[in-house]
Length: 237
Image (cartoon, rainbow, N blue to C red; front, side, top):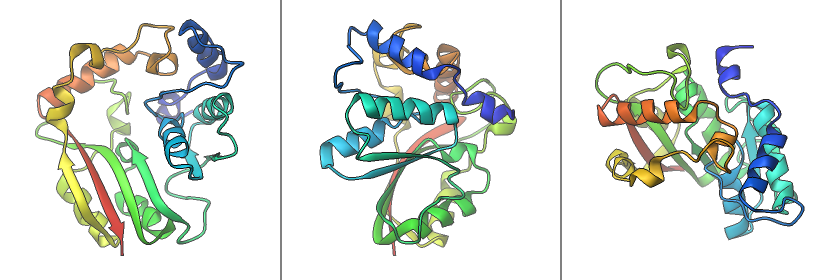
């Protein structure tokens, strides 16, 4: 198994999720309303499906995370609105001009070929469709602390600069309507909001090993300007 596949693996994920749900005082046999920070488990998809009634296709490379997403979709009664596909973002199994919106959070930092990534995004968007994303980009200096939430080793860290990101997006016929650096907002969160839930509690630590160490390293990188957090909305023309 590659280091990246190992980084995004979570053995016995359904049991871990169910244990976390029960530890939170919830009954997994009843329909649940789940708030999930994403990371491959479809939290954003469930939010979008619930709030807008839209159909969502989830693409995730990790078989473990796909299993977890399907479990949570079933527990929330959203399995008919959300389809989970185990696939690469570089090889989307969908026809051209399929979607009104492509939504991506913290994915590109593991993909070295940004041109191939954004070309694929552009391909599946309808003309006039929107690409909405959040991403880490390079800052100043070299990242000094591993593991990070997106990479356990330097070889899996594929950040690019904000300038290169926007240049490639434009090259792929995706034009900016919003692009902003949100690093300061992220750093100004209260300590309580930034602290991972305790082991076994319902939170990221249910399926992300060594979350405390990864989160601490990421925050230090952000504080020292080694990485920046950005978000954007780009329209397909």
